[in-house]
Length: 345
Image (cartoon, rainbow, N blue to C red; front, side, top):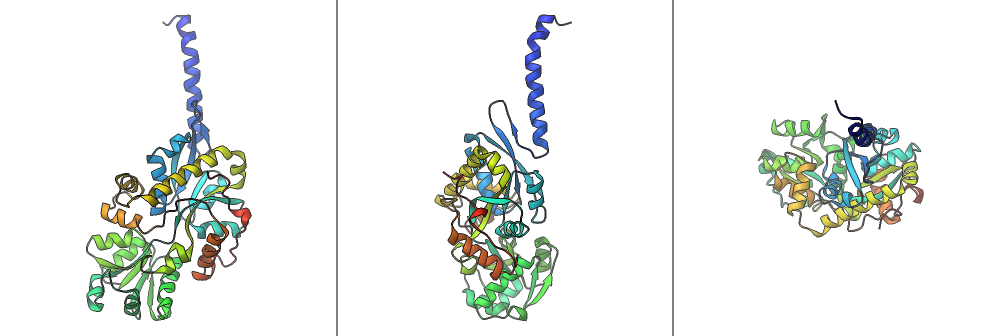
């Protein structure tokens, strides 16, 4: 048996361990938890696309740790992101502008505290057979590509990507109605249909088109470098960091630390080659199982901001792309009350 003295000595340690366990338990349901060293654990909603890289890199490079923030990742979809944020399951949501504007159209009290990626890293990939028939390569001019896609059969798994393809076609005087659109349930289904010869091409976000090309099953013939309508210069923000207004007010220090770390990561991404060892290491975590050359090319298609600050002009372009360009969120609107640079250095 232990002596009473030993028991007394163990009691504080036991209490500390119990306290730590309780703090950890609080974090399991997505709520913020604070460890004894002052480190705050927050839950972040990510969707497993290339835009998540800024958060993964901030984590890997120690930028969050410097701010005494620990990240818990929660994988969400476009359909579940907003509800997770509103319920408190996550404190931050790495959101597409479309998702954020849709939330604002429902009068939800959300606010964007940083932008962490510009433009739309889309790819049009055609089958090898179609490429040979129309003499298409990755270097074929955009106008020639668009002309070849007229009267073709295209796979599409999202109304937004279909509209984005339409923007490209119309910019080269091709009527999207001339294309036979095959609606499929997912980008994976698009890929399967292409390899089976059921569609001539499909469009989706990277890295899937580049993966198809890497595997020798197709050729990427259009990307943001070739389609300026998808770039930051014309389409605006590609991703934003969103939080509830109530959380921003109650945990301003954490929000500032989070936004600061994300900006450090985007600045690193903007100033280093996409094949940089640290970037590739974080990209492997962001998009597991993707070949390094595909990761590097996908990262290079995003315009990573030196500063995560937002402005009226950026939101004006973004709103025009979402509302008028692709016809999403028809009642979308945004004001200075919906975004802030207050928490950025």
